[in-house]
Length: 268
Image 1 (cartoon, rainbow, N blue to C red):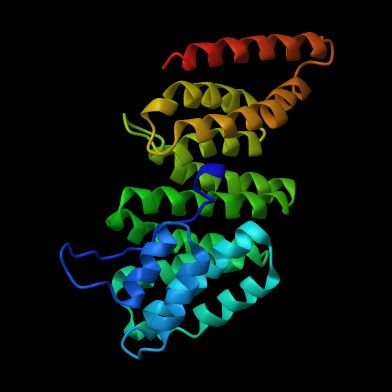
Image 2 (cartoon, helix red, strand yellow):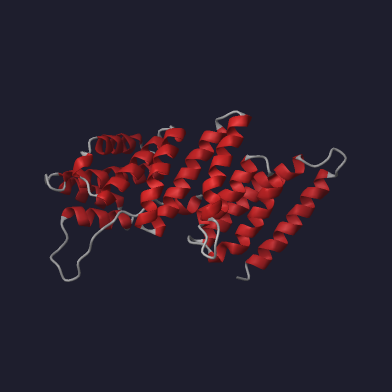
């Protein structure tokens, strides 16, 4: 989904009234403000201090990954790899370990190792739950995106198994009166990936209506749902109709129904 691809916040401790933050805290603050060039400069400064070096390397690697995500400069990917693999994990506090795990997952994802990336994001999910809702939302989305890529590179039987695995985790995340936006989207996408287009259709409609209740930007969720419905679900439902059915009329009917649902949902 588009709404979490801006990255995951890095924990920064700020003490009101204290002296100017050390370079590590400053690097984290700049990262969270999406000022990645400045974050890299501050993280390099912090990395020169032995007591901050390993935590700073995590921030440095993550900032390079964000620059790679936006500019696709392979030098950033190489710099991220160099920083992250050199970290001495014994010198990290638990939150930094989580951020390293996420960074390594992103590194594998960008290098095309989607199945392995999904395993790392899956391992990070438990810690993200104990951390904060924003981190869990982002990690859940990264995990599902990695599985989605893995599924698309697999045969039909394995593809359905991968999406079934995805559903088992995203369905609980999409439940309740404060559902995960990523969970809402991936329930519909996973159902479509299993060729269950009827379920995907109903899940997409429900997700559109529930978007204002979700944890995560409802506008971005609805943008992703619109793309999924138009490019995957409606064509998929049309293909599964009986041979004698008028597919062109069926598509027009689904388009009209979807438009009516959107108008209803946009009132909220």
